Image (cartoon, rainbow, N blue to C red):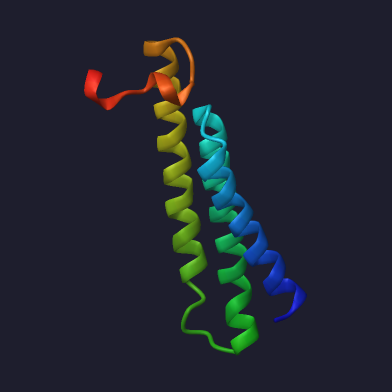
Length: 98
């Protein structure tokens, strides 16, 4: 395993751990999701150059598009929950009360 692969795997793993253990604010969860998407985007961008294939060069662009949509939706949910509940704490967001 090269140092490049190790850095991608460790950044993705640290993002997953951050999402699993630091779930107090919605903005921290969104940042962990974005860092996961960023590490996946960089890994998918470098993968075709390592394997010398051109058939999967569109995949990183599609994933980046979905990541931007996910970020926009997450920020809209953050604004809506802050307006209705007064804060972005995740323990205030209970789906059973809606």
